[in-house]
Figure (cartoon, rainbow, N blue to C red):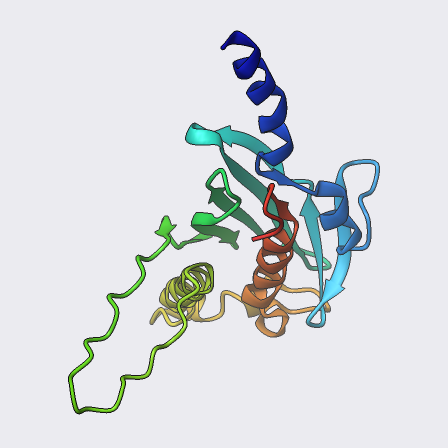
Length: 202
């Protein structure tokens, strides 16, 4: 019995969830010595920090990284992406937080939705169309819908100072045209692609 337990302990790490930090960095123009990657995306420059990876209960994994929107002559925007995966490498929850010009955008924690109940088949009626359910895709869609909603709360404020928030960030590359959400979505997509498990990427 003891020999079996030892064998299982040796096998388990090969199937544990993990993250390919080097592969992720290569997709972002490569890691520099300071563990950041600087690159251009959607007509703006970004800096992504090498993710911090923490073991989660039940054999899962928590990943967190910082993404800076770089603007000449200003601090730009600082954002954080947090993701939690189960032991099979399946995304369970995610959160986006951004700070720009002293204002905060926070999606709160978005959890993986449950699969919808199968449609009821009525005898004599055409079979109902079944819409494919991915779970991860639905979570990411909800995450960025919430991000856009929180962004609008900041940018559509009545007073002129808040309405001008993006244009006041200054620099030759304005955050108004940078599409910060697109840069964060790019990082999220790449992070998902570089999560690995015994069953491959999720």
